[in-house]
Amino acid sequence: MMTWVYLLLSLAAVVLGAEVLVNGSVAIAKKFKISDFIIGATIIGIGTSCPELVVSLVGAVGGNADIAIGNVVGSNICNILLILGMTALIAPVLITKDNLKFELPYCIGVSLVLTILAFNFFNGKTSVVSRPDGWILLAFFAFYLYWSFRNGGKGQASEQREEEVACKGSDKLIVMILKVIVGLAFLVVGSHFFVEEAVVLARRFGVSDAFISITVLAVGTSLPELAASVASAFKKNTQLALGNIIGSNIFNISFILGVCSQVSPLHPAGITMVDYLVMIGAALMPLAFAIRGKISRFGGLLMLAMYVAYICYIS
Image (cartoon, rainbow, N blue to C red):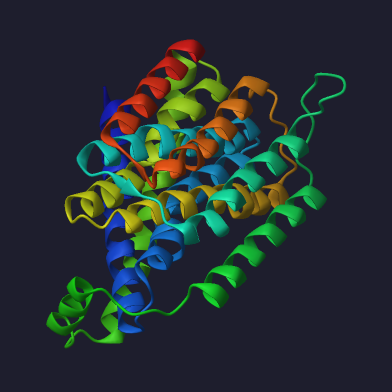
């Protein structure tokens, strides 16, 4: 019973920490008038992925590589099929031509790179994501940050955001920075206890680390993305929501697994080719809907159905 209590408390700390972190980060971004999509793809995307970072690092340090890779693969699938699907049900998600030039293809690209690094296509056996592989992933992350701020960085704030900035003009930079620090503290502590209790429950019920990481941990650590995206959808700012999901997925693969592989080489023994293919397929979904310029409510429903089918398949 206490394990469930600790799990819920730690998850609450993760969500609270992510909310405070995102609020502080967005306030800083608005102060310097960074565009909506870039806020979503970098500040919010990276901020809401901090739970995945901590959970994956804890798994890597503890020798549970299935948790590190399974958490990232599961989170990326959850982010697009579940969270972006739910967002589209609230408000159709607009996809601009600028999104098609770089961010969406780049998300697909890093998903393919991870699959190539983590799976040997020739003998059908899983391989190791080594430290050199990690450096390749980190290089992809560095280029992503460079491109994002070089080509889409500062822009005109929307009228709504300008009003928000005016209302919060008295906020001091030090307060914003403190929010970021406090948010990170909650994330680190909450994620640490969350992964510990989740592993305890998994082993108690005889569930493998791979399965628990690709379902319970993935959905749990994706709650900040869900909260941020749904809130953006209600405010009709779907570019912020899309940026959040795409940026989070790129960060999960390129930075989180890049860093984790430096701690310990990752042996993704419990993650199958089906999981990687579903991750790649999920990354292709926004590109498929781009023909119509948006992910409609029907499209969102279709993505949710695909996620349910995937969970039923791996159960």
